[in-house]
Length: 360
Ligand code: MG
Image 1 (cartoon, rainbow, N blue to C red):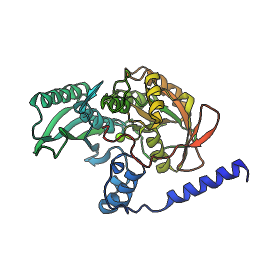
Image 2: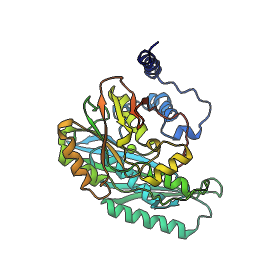
Image 3: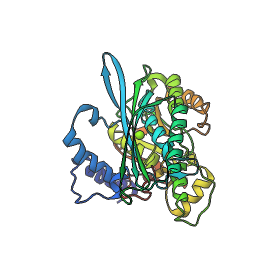
Image 4: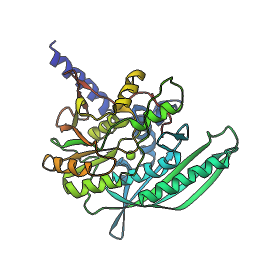
């Protein structure tokens, strides 16, 4: 069997497996169910969606769109359980604001307001809580949103890890936005808004589990300025955006390729990675494409508007290293392929386990 025939057979098997209706058969929840990879996908598609089914949820966007008297609003929610709660470049407070703001931004919605629910562990020093509330206030201010409702619960010592936060975000869908998780079209250029893998690696190194020191800071920031610049530069040629959080750029590409029944081809050599992140990732045996970001988005832009979109993005603070890393292909549907720096081509699948638990 020739190499191309064998490759074709493998692709057919993978596609056949993916096309099957998801069923949730796991007996217990594991950390993998929260990792954004295959286990998360089976939990969502095999248990949550069938029970709660409705069109807004089924779209599996970063935020749902709700129309009220002709105004399109966007609604999203997220929980933050990062360990440790402080790390170079940020803390759980910044994530709780920026993570939710970014789900609105990549849905083409200008963030308006947040709610904040806190679950605190008995014994948490007040100084630590105060620092996080200050971080939330600063991040909200920087992102142009206000926290307009909240809730606080306390659980016994040992029943939570310092603190968890949950934020719900409300935004108004920008009239320029024509975005959809199913909007990818063959020929679209794939753009990332900067260097990948910084947040997840900063949190990993902050745990002191690895005898590894490197100057790596979380990239946590609001992505609304980046989304705004892309909407302005590309308009309806901007087909989709996603913030590359849990599971990294690789997982975002897989989800969207699957939703749109197209393929994504990534040129590995064009993916921007800071040397310190690349070095640490190599030592730990993790591909930077799977490492979480908290201030990076992936955008899909029709070819005619791609270079203008990239220029506009690079003018946004924090996005100077934005790059075009590949393009959307017609075949094989639902797959992400990588042209490696060594000249080969391989499949970049969703992860099966959770190499980096609780990084956001
Ligand atoms: Mg998201």
